[in-house]
Length: 369
Image: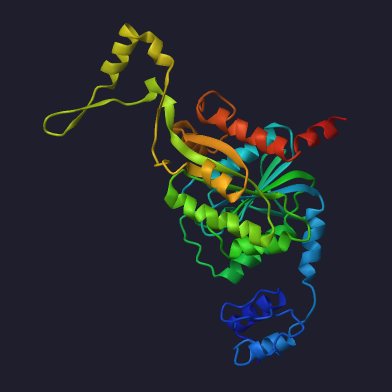
């Protein structure tokens, strides 16, 4: 009599080294020599399966190491909360590195919320299999992307997966995707510190992770979780390459604003054209000004102060720019035209600082030698 689907899944998880969700506290792990035999295993529903599971190192780690041997640098992009612009930063970082003639891969491991395909203009694309493995979907010849978003039959369907299944897909991405020679593999992780984060760190541990960039917004409610993210990185031995404060005030050209006048009844009337005409006639020198307003409370010192307190680098601030939001919606780089005149220079400075701080700029010199 064959195993049930549930039992087969459990056995597969054991063989991959995953600790089952219903395991006893202090589980030694199914690949440990003491699996199914130690005192902590007594009464565990997985004891029998663990006792018969092949022991020793996970053979998939050897395959992953071979795949990653052609990747020079691996960078995680993290955030404490969702909605802070982490994936937007990952996308624009990848666009920028590719524009600098680096060979770039962008791996989306936000399994339940894959937004990278849209932000790279790749919605509706499929993953193809070759004799070398899964082929990334390419934006340009030197910018490839892999995401679960390419595998969903309906992009509106929720991905409701438990930890082991998500971890299994991340492992499959790492061992089955053929990136070829890469200068950078940018990994866009889900917010928080969950199974996906532990999995990616453990799976890449032997091949080395250069570090993590943490994206946040200025207010304390976001920074509280960023502190936990920094703590996570320190505990698992991942260097924090730097913190980026996103949405650091709303900034845009004054003439792009919409102006309203409130009536005595509380209704708003659009007076944008009247204001613009007045400025053009009476104060034309004001037309080139950029207006800025604080959106999130940064009275606590924001990400810069937190970075000093936590002893990690602060890379810089990116203003909340409607044109950057539009670029993300349209799946294009914010660096290719002058539309993102507020955010693009800030992002460029941050990326240049990242490259200079960690010696990545030497790669360009070496490649040209």
